[in-house]
Image (cartoon, rainbow, N blue to C red; front, top):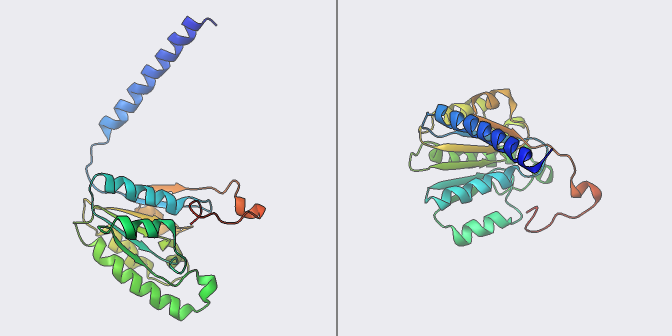
Length: 202
């Protein structure tokens, strides 16, 4: 096939693609915040959520971040937000991983206290974006009441977006989310014996 014919076919294909994209954009006419669930067994769920934090801050939006499970070891995102983004309301459960604590009662108390930091954000229309990092584990371990979480997310201000991260989360949580993305673990350096890397993994 000649270059001119290839160019013509490419142009026709791109014109068709543009028509489809333009039509989809035109059809999406509902203006409100969205609920996003980032799940799956692959790496990158929290990283994606923090990418959205940076995106929102670029537009001068008000952001709240609540991290469940993490907190004993400093992470790059925590360091950066605390040092450079004091306008971000940031809370952590602070107990570390549940397999380290091995204390269910203490973990439940910490989860409840942390959820009580998240709840006011989800009721405050001043927040454009709220990140609930690793919240799915609190549902899976039955540390927090699933119905309460779902009701609170559903009742948030119309303009507010919320992002929930973590493996699983259950069918009920997935059902109320506008966007659900599953990150699949195809290959991971850790399983090959490579240590977690500062700036990449934490």
